[in-house]
Each structure stands twice: as structure tokens, then as C-alpha cells.
Length: 536
Image (tube, rainbow, N blue to C red; front, side, top):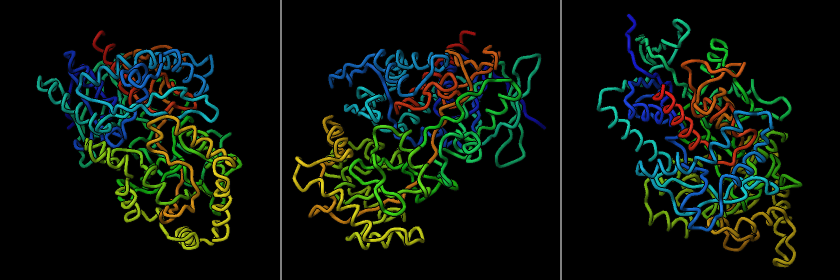
């Protein structure tokens, strides 16, 4: 027997966008059903694990740091970096909406919910030639986005005391049925039993994330003109499989756009305690490390340096002869610069340990480096380059890296320092010096020095490969988050929010993101959908 549940709105997906949609609808007096495949303790989706960086425009933190940002500047950066064409109407509309409303609809809203940001604004994705973020606008949530999710779940629980929320965790949507031309019924089954439910509502909000959790979908939609690596790790989640995208496209004639555009990372490695098969962590590559190919040779002629163009890094890594690279550094660099994206490995920020955070920022994060040395077989440490080369070959089961090649690579870089600053002629050093001009980057970026510096500590090699993360494309939506069909008409009763909508408009970022746009866009698209649902 199929159990029946009725509501004003059914929200499919309990990530950030789904939670915000449900919360705003509940606060407006709507009856809401929220269905999520994960169990209750895993509500929050990727945001539960994410670092919590947000690209915001015109904030008090920017004003205190004398950053003269405004929507016009941010939109110029966004459109140029994303390479959004003039005919891409809805993506451009959402880009404009984002930069004009990120302060009021995201920053101010989060502050009212009791959340705070670190005082320093970071400068990421500057572009290889300055065509990215022309100003710092990357804000970090104090407590990471894990705290964001916990605060919103607490608010959701409070709003649900009215009895208007049906929360269904551990259920998978298997079908969606129409009645009289209007979306009415969602069929769901329990992940661990044969129980089936029919969820009836006049409005359906798709908040199930993107496609990047499915290697099949990633490879199917990978642009043919771009190199594709043989192997990739999964930094999303297997449930982000694109199945409901296909349903909307085939059953509802919804328009699915920019599916081949993805926000992946170039320096991932397997999670030491994986949550699922192929689970990858994304390191934030050290600016001062040398990025090497599988033979231990420096990739060039233009060296790879993080913080400027992640899209370019991924393409260059994917085009290499082997599907992996090496990051070569020493302990001095690692304790200052090495980091892993996400809440899990940013304990001091996640747990709001202010004094410990300051100490590790100023004195070095020896704790994290030692943890990786202890737990991760892809994080190799040795006192000599000869020993390190042997460890690198042992890990890959090859003899690709010779001690002489590794030594020559390091010697060539260190030669830049033979005449002190007078003889620097290396693009990586130039980029490091540029980054260090900005105070927050100076704290996390070493002063350029030879790798073979006395007292620099043992050498480190990190074995890394491409890790998938977010979908930049999705179901096309208008500014009310209503899904559009192939003719550009609204499909009655169907909404898409967050990553399911390509973070708005089916691909508002274009080919590149200014980084930190994803969490705010989940909130913006969700709140837009809720306003329209309540109004309707």
C-alpha cells in the first residue's frame, strides 16, 4: 500500500538550496514536504562538508578593508571571466541578480540568522591576466558552511513546530506524475525498505544538486574540444547523478543547458577515510610548490599556480600524458600554505577556535601536515630528494621519476635566488610576489626562497589528480526559479534551485566561476522560488 502525503510544496533534495526553500515557505505559512535520500544526520548535502567561502559584493568587511567593490565592477568581472555570450539571456540575468542582491539577500539574511564572517576578505580567481576578480570579495563563514547548515536546520526545526513540515529522510524519488496538466504527485521509496510514498502538491521544487557525482554523466557531457583525463576522483556525491535532470528534460520538455560546464579541481587525492567509492579531497595547492608531471619535471613553460584560474589548471592537467601530477615542496612551505578544501580539515574555523586559529595562521599548521603524513599514502615526506624520488615511484609502481631529474628540477628553480631578488625571472615567483601584496594572502603565502633552503625541513611530494565537484549547468530558470521549457515558457508548478538550476538560469557562471558563488547562489535561487510560491 502506498502512503499518501499532501502539501502546498514538495521539495526534492535536502541540501542548502532545499533547506532554504523549505524554511522560507514554512515561515510564510506553507505546508511543505522535504524529501532527501540521505539520513537525517547527513542533511545539508555538500554544504555540510564545504569550507564556506562566499563571493559577496559591497559588504562591511570589504568597506573596513577599503575595497571599493560595487555590483557594476563585480558584473564586469563575472561576465568577462565566465565568457558569457550576449545571447545567454537567463544566465546573464542571474549573474546581474547575484551581484546586485548578494549583500541584501545573502549577507544580511545570514547575519539575521546569527552567522558571522571572518574579518579578512580573500582574493581568489584573479585570472591568469587579471581578467578574474579585480578586487577581493571571497568571505569565509566563521564556523564554515557546516555551521550554516546547523543554524538553518535549527531554524527549520523551530519553524516546523507549527506542524506544517513533513521531513522524509532516506527516501528516493522514483517517479513524478501529472494530473490535469499540473504537477501533482511525487513517488518515493525508502532506501532501506520496500515502503512507498505518494507526495501530492501543486508545486515541485527540484533541489537535488548537479550531475558531478556520476562519472558516467561527467564523461557523457564532457566537452569534446577539451582534454578529458583517464581517471577522476569524486568530490561531489554519488547521489548527484543527474537522473531528475533527465526526467525534467524528457517528461516535461525542460531546457537543460551548459551541462558540459563543470567546476572541478586539479589537485585532488583519495580521502583517507572515504565516505563512498572514489571519494576525493581537494587540496588547495601551495603557491610556492612546484607543480610537476609524472616524470618529476616542472610543468611549463608557464608554471601552474593556484589562485588565478582553476578552469585553466584543470584543462592543463587533463591534457598531460598521465592523469596525475606531483606537488613538490618542503615543510616550510607546507605548514604555511598547505590546506584542504572543506570543513572537515579546517577544524579551527569549523569549531570556531579563535585563538588556535590565530596561532596556526601565524606559526604554521603543523597539525594538518602531520595528519596527512600519518594518514594519507599520497602525501610523501623524505629528508632527501633521492629518497623522495624512490617513494614517488613506489607509490605509482613505476620508475618514471629519477633522482637526477628531481634534483635538476629543484636546482633550476633555486637558481633564481643566486643573485637575490635581482635575478628573479620566473613567472611563479612573480605571481607569488603579487599575491603577497594583499595582506590576507601574505599571511598564507611564503616569501619566495629556494626549495633547498637550510632549515626548510624535509621534502614533500603530493600525488594528485583531477577531482569532480560542481555542475555549472542545469535546468534553465527565470528569476523566480521557475523551470523553462525548450521554447522559453514557464512550466507550471515546476521550480529548480541551487546546483540543479546551474545555480540560476541553467548556467549563470558560464565557463568559470569567480569562486565562492555557489553557496550564495543556492540561497538566492531558493529565496526567489519561495517568494514566488508564497505569492502564488
